[in-house]
Amino acid sequence: MKPASPFETGRNLIRRIASDEILEEAFQWLCRRRIDYSPNSDIWDFRLKWPQIKPELQNRLVSGI
Image (tube, rainbow, N blue to C red; front, side, top):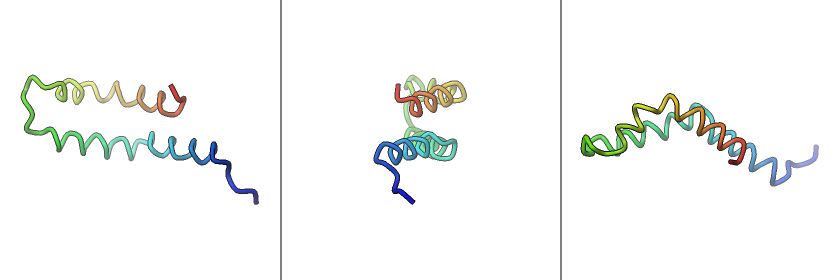
């Protein structure tokens, strides 16, 4: 079997990074890090909009935009 090209390996890595599991883990990490931020911080808007942001982020990662 022929080894995967660097391009295929990179695409597989991006797909893994864009997976629900990894993005949710990153989102939870971010939320924990910013738990004590000011109520005026942009993190609260980001958390509120996460359900809409996540699919767009996944699409952009996978498509290379």
